[in-house]
Image: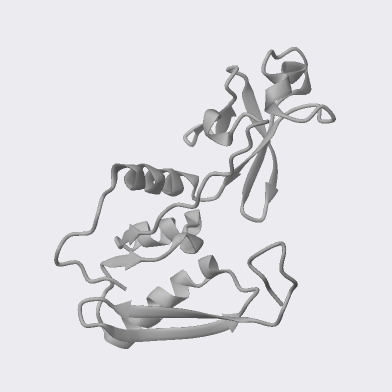
Length: 186
């Protein structure tokens, strides 16, 4: 059961994940999943199947923003495959200070808020680590009203796994980098 819109009811559905060799216009892999399966979860297996089927290493992958997960960018980087995948749009909430204003230090595993306070790792979740500000730091902060709801005591931030690769992909996308003329595209 799935739907892509909140104003539509859930219905049985399927998704088709297709890989095409762009140089030759040939379909090299097709996978059909239930509608509830995330596209982002398919890329790694799809890449392996294409390379196994064709016997050729994939050099460039193009995909829509549904595949734009840190895990996918990390996998492609690891295999030295160029990713032409537009990063997902940042959730914009004019009421709250956006996540991009918080600075993540991957070397020391800390997050610094716009007011300069350090958020500490709070707990591990499925796809990353939650960082929490100290309630005493947030209590007197001049940015408090714009940072989080009145019922909360402090700000929390989720730093997803492979955050660094996701940030590199966003920077690359903002520069408009394109694949070379002889790139083999999956």
